[in-house]
Amino acid sequence: MEFEFNLGEQIINSQPKRDETLYASVSGSAAQLSADELVFLEHQTNANHMMTMTVLNAISLARQFKPIHEHVQHLQQMVPELRGQQAAIEKVFGFLKKKHLLVSEEQWIESLKNTPQEAEQALPYAGIVVRTCHRPDSLKRLLDSIELYLQQHNRSDAVLVFDDSTDKHKMEQTAAVCQESSLKVQYYGEAWQQQFIEMLCQALPEHQPEIQWLLAQREGFTAGRVWNLALLSLAGKKFAFYDDDYLLQPRESADSNHETIDITGRGDLSVGFGLNVREIKDGSRTVESDVLGMSIDACGRRFGDWLENNADVGVGTLKYEELPELQRQDTHTRIKTVGHGTWGSPRASSNYWLYFLTGKQREAFWKDRDIYLDNIEASHLLHYSDNLEALHYNRFSPAVIDNSSVSAFAMPTDVNEDHFFGCLMLGCYPNQVSLHYPYMMGHIQDQMRNRSSMNHVALQANLNRFLGDYFLSVSGRFDSVDPATRMQILASCLDDLGSSSDQLIENRLREYRNQLSADLVHSLQQQLLEVPDAPIYWQADVREIIETNASYIRSSDSPYLSGWDQSQGLSSSIQDLRTELDTVSKAMKVWPKLWSFCLAQ
Image (cartoon, rainbow, N blue to C red; front, top):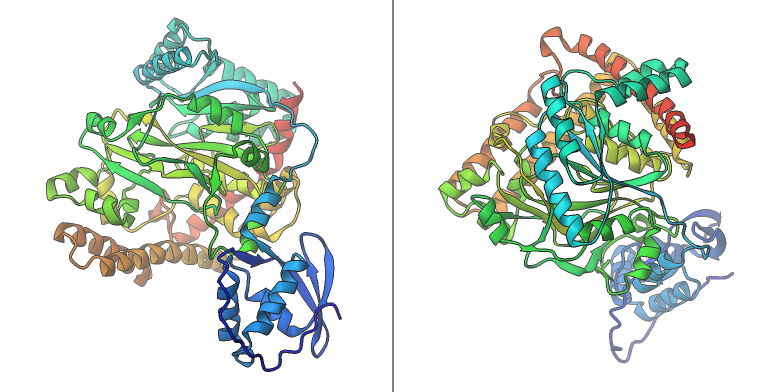
């Protein structure tokens, strides 16, 4: 047998010097052949290995990256009959390393860089896409900042303005701002949008309802629909992407780290506070390098190729990370989106996330009552990554999008359209990376937001967030690597949910609501325990959020999503949800065809 060891009594005369190299076992599946003989199929190479149950135990319990001596200790703790047999267990791990069933942290990172040898084709770049709506003054401010940035870095990017305005006067003002700019601005207003939609409807008349739903102008918040217009009209190209209340003025915090990348996919954002924009700028520094250029260059590249060509960037420690989870990334992983932080205004509509701050950031948040009352509105912030991060999907609207192969679409109406887009992109590209740089672009909202009002109501998700989270929960169940096929399968999952019974849909909604609120309550309870001497005003708000959400869970209230008309009753709302699920599913089935048609034009 390939792996067979006699684990008898072992005598250890001396303690060898410990090697702190991190090792973890690869993923695989086992089939039992006899009472103590198994075959282990290693998933990455499809190689079969014959082994004993003891060896399989070693593989199963060594999934986390740890030094060998910690693996030995853990195995003895979990398998009582192996206690006191350190030398024999070390011998087992030695054979596992030799057979590459146990790999080091460095070996796995290097394996990501072994990308195919064929030369990478440079992806076409369309320029800087700007979403605008009823804010010609904000648009002018952004275009002025773009003009200055391009001059500073000797760039000549095109600027493509997609106007979501419905007011005729605002449309005219917006068009005038674009025409008067000295930049190469292309204006995609109402007339162009109607012509584009009519062209698609004439070419694909059987899909006219889906085309209209995805792209047509309507009342309310519809930033997602102009995002979809950009994705279709720029099919096959990557592009930068900003809203009109941004400024192309990159800044960074004093402690930003450009030498380390976190590849675990779940890095946290850091926060700095100020009472006004001047204080925010005083708490950061101007970035002189071409952040836009490096972001555009990274987007669409194989992640391993990016790592190889950025040798000065080290990978953060993977200690205690499970290798099977990390193996989501492989040699085919591409950087599908790139993101940055913001200085000025945050991108979140609520302020719950501020109560999860720790250490110095939490102390700055609650510094004194007057500052705290200003900070809870989250009006003037630095919101950034401490270092480079390889996330599973973009947290907010991405700064650059790889649209060279079929992308996701955004929900055409309501907020959290960016969450829906990010989750659907991950569903289509399960091994993708969203690369976030430790830089911040300006984000200056013209109106103050009353974010603290969210503390008085229980956390509720809207349809866009619900659907995005639903995609996250089901997309790991299927194996196709074709993004269009994966989108069709996700659409069939919506069909499955929509065709289930009222009781099952209510259960799904209630479970989802309970999980959101329970996670919030549990995390905030931990915060209270961690800082028992916190300022009373902070404790009072945390307890209010906890009680509000705990009461919501305890109640028998119907599990409505935010934005639903609760006066019509849950049964009617469920029927409306079925209609929404059917509409989204049909759009998902049509989208790859629309995208491919636009690519061919």
